[in-house]
Length: 634
Image 1 (cartoon, rainbow, N blue to C red):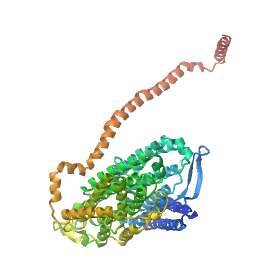
Image 2: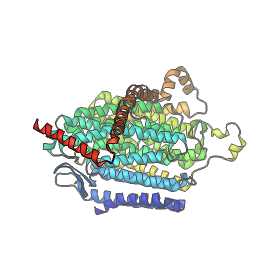
Image 3: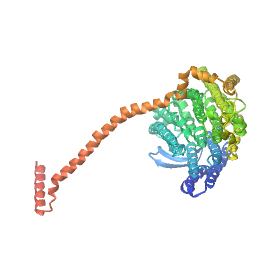
Image 4: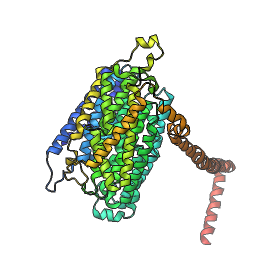
């Protein structure tokens, strides 16, 4: 597995080359360099996955944990040190496949979507940096190496969200994402330090003696680590950065905010899962309830949004909530008793990455055609964009949980795990799944059906001469490939490769849960069809008018942004920062000003002592000697 080092080196070298010399290249050359490096990474990732899983299991029935590279970087004690290396186990290998696949699709897609954009070379350099950071994060051999690449992911996402640096909204969104995630990452860092101090190691798998030494501090450390994961994965109430991050280019939304970056919190909990389930089960259940609240909140908001990218953004938040819930309902590492949720969460992470990237890239094709994000500017586009229409429909069916598409299989396993944990949890998550089907088909009908294209609604001759058209092959090819994966990924024996205890887990659908979820999804789709497929269906408008206060609150995201502004400006800035600033100006600054003034005044008083007269110096010398002699004698 020595070739795994090149999985990190290729995008890093691509970043350096494009960052330093990209502006001297033609845009197509720069794009080709970035895409070629990712193609190499993808080939190596698939080769790694094939060789790893084809290598067979060990005598105890588990896949081995391999470290092709692991170098000691910063030693503190004989046991506590920060290493840098490559770790291969089932979830890291799976993540290599997910990240490389989605990133390659985005690189190819961007050839068409970003064509003619100023900063094309810079864009591909940032893509390479982000991909390298994500890959380094998932193959980290210890928690501190993960943190290093975790922060690199934050930096590269800041650069990509703010790619349109002349657009105020993009700059504000990039700063918001950076600040919110840094705030959460402070909790992550404190958790790491507590863990390292009390356990005496940064390893993912500390010894029993180290865990015993950590004692009651281990749940606290893991809880603080989850705060960092909640920030990156946009869990409530730290979700506020993700919808605004849609100001970046749409391919960036597909790469960062749908398929890879936002799942690192899920990956963190999965990576530390043995410690959570063995030593902090109550903390794990907190993870579950945070996931429930997040999934319901985001699904509710998605039902009324008008910007198609924001609908998908809140859909992402809701689906990440599903993954967190699946991990949180685990009661043991045995898949047949409590660890089913672990496998289901990783399975849904895998399938969701593919169909959510498909949805975002499809949205990019639509925006590219109509030059608007608003559903009010769309309608009837199925006639003009058949490839986008059918691939988008496949993704909608998948996320709604309709068989035989991949989302059905992974979401059904999550619902089964929830019902095993608690019937209440199972029915709540089933209801949220129904909401998912409803808002996704509301989106689908408003884009592709709902009468004719809105550009023709007023008989605009200019609009008639500029009808929407299908995107170029560079943009539709990734759609077709991702749609194909979405159609077949559900049939993969995922549990044979990834499970909580490493043993092979044979997936068996729970018939009752499966039938219930299908029926509810179909009913939700039927309701969306009745309300939005027709050109003029007054039901939605009547409901919005009847419940205007609730509709307004949901549309404005339950005023969570305003709540955070109140907390930051009225409480933190006014009640905390202002007194600190006063103390800094009037006490700290004045103290140092007084010190400087005293030194200056004292120097003025004694400057005559430096007269240059030897006789005067001799007098001071003798006087000082006499004083010292008297002091010593006394």
